[in-house]
Amino acid sequence: MRSARTSGLPSSHTDAGPETAGTITGGTAAEPAAATATAVAAVAPQVSIVVSTKPSQARPPLRPVRQLVLGVLGVFGFKPNPAPGTANNPILEGLWGAYRRIESLVSNDTPTVKGAAVVDTSLTTDGRVAVTLRVEFDDYDGNALSYTTTDGAHGTLTRNTDGTYTYLTDASTAGDTVSITARDKGFHLHGLLGMFKPGGGHTSTATLTLTLDPVGEPPVTDVVISTPRTGNSWTVRVPSHNPEVTLTAGQPGHVEITRATDGSYLVTVTDSAWALANPGTQITVVATATTRDVNGEIQTVSSTVPIGTVSNLMTIGGYLQPPALPPGTTWVQARSSSIGEVLLRSDGAAFLVDIGITGPIVVPELPAGLTYTQVAAGDGHYVLLRSDGTAIAIAGYPYLQPALNIPDLPAGLTYTQVAAGADHTVLLRSDGAVIAIGTTLNGETEIPDLPAGQTYTQVSAAGYVTVLLRSDGTAVAIGINELGQTDVPAPPSGVNYIQVATGAHHTVLLHSDGNVTAVGYNSHGQLQIPDLPDGMTYVQVDAGHTHTVLLRSDGAVIAIGWVPNGIPTLPDGVVYTAVSADHSYTTVLFSRV
Image (cartoon, rainbow, N blue to C red; front, side, top):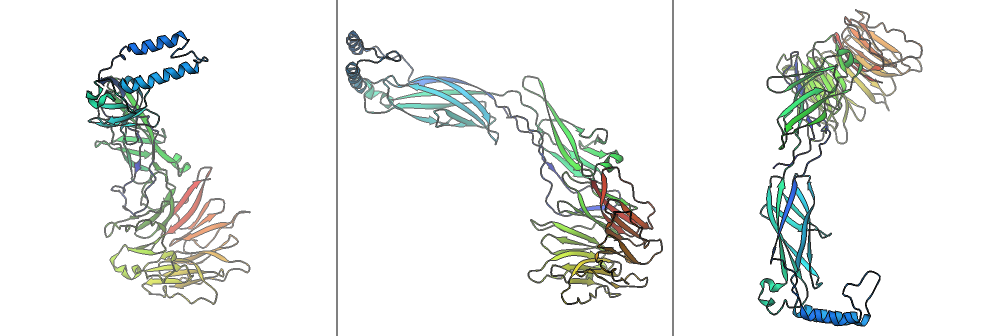
């Protein structure tokens, strides 16, 4: 027989499969926590027991001397087993005790087996069968007994502190034989011939024959494996312990499931309006396994398992499809470039979605225990910041090697922010210094010295421009300036800059009072910042090549300049949380409030 197993359904994530728009490659990071479905109670087998004894059991022989002694003492009112609440005469009790000691010394009976029964059967956590037995012995002469156990061919037998016994065997065992031997203690003889008996007549052995009969086993689904595809779709595979498995959607009406010829399932959110209104919602499937038990009855078990998360990312005006999200994760950052997009997930995994000009661009495997914490995209390379404060750069084109040579850090320092331009990389250090590497065609890597007591607090780069925010709330821009994109004005009196962004041809600066200044190229009105409604502020800014994107304090996004597709209006209860702009398209993150 085979024991039934608990139907926990861990969900495992693998890299996404082939894509139709761009190639997705993933970074190494902690995978989502295993999802556990409703457990099915394990079913232990039924166990029967047959007892045989050695030597064979017999009633204690008639003892004439004992009967004579009891008869004489009975004349004076002695009873060997007085009624409750009554007591024998102490002198008569003492005479009877003296006789019994003499009798048990020279004519002691062998212990006898009173009976055996199965108390309980259960399955251990490792799937073995545990049978609790009660086996009772009796000693006619009242001697204390000791016990030894003998294991069977297929399992072990041990005595418990409460006097019961536990037989432990594999789940495949159909039957076994074990034994328990009782031995009476103390010096005595078992009759004149007792010394010639096996064990001197002191022992009696109970041989137990156990039969294990399986009951109907529920079906078990071992695992549900979900592989993110693109957008809001996942490939799901359900290897099963018992063969017949069906999969249904946990969000009927919004999610469709189709089965492929290889037995896998394609799970897709088909209701785009519902998806827009429910970012971060866990997509679940119900895996139902069906089997027929040993009695011919059909048994089923259903387990609900999360297999993915509704995406909280939208790319507007672009054509690359981000990978779908595993369960329990969301997107936390997105940066785009002319060759693709780099995405950061909430579990610290990074993904590249590129157009594949030079073949797939691969995110390097992370050392154990590390995650990615920030990402940046240039025109031909990507920069990723790691949780240990180091940074790596990945080339999209082979000629960009100078922008990839990230300097080693001085002892005790870390990188805290990264940015990428056309051919250069900018890194902010934990001591407030900025390091810039790569090609310097227009001075974009020539970082200005800081006034005494000042540090840099934020960096931005695009094209051949670098913009730096200082701790005194001022900003400086360096690099090409044919359109006035580096002519950063001083902030208004009593106001600081708190964030800077450059789109290569224009620069956008967010004020501490929630207003925005934009300088540089204004070909499509990208510098014409709209007035704010009363009580509103801007809280984040970004710049593309010919457009500006602004996140407002009420969760709305305003895009100005060349934005042919506009910014979608979100359903009630959903707001934008972050913006990213590059070239002519915009990436936004959104969530429910």
